[in-house]
Length: 145
Image (cartoon, rainbow, N blue to C red; front, side, top):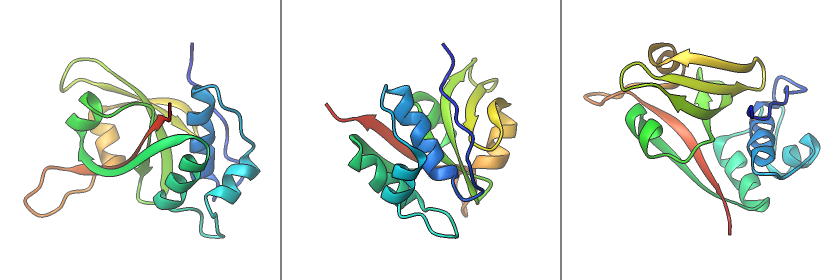
């Protein structure tokens, strides 16, 4: 069964649309308008905090994290919403393959269901701090109860 996908209706709707896809994955249905309102969307879009708060109002426990790829691949509950190219949100719903040769399965509200190699994924997701391994931002979500 493939992961549920919705196209974002507006350029600023990537965050609420990602949340809509994750909710649908867990059998919950919400309109984009409901999720826009709950995430406090503005003309500039929505923040990770806004998505997190909206998710909590519809029955999810959330945790915003900055983590290395290994933790995303091996410890994080998927699907997770990740910050993408510094200005977009996508859903990582599956990671397959052996270490170093992973395939990352992404639901992009602007581009459909797509896959990336680890190198391609890291280029769009991760940033590096001084003396740190590359890390990216993710919103981890699990349904309550």
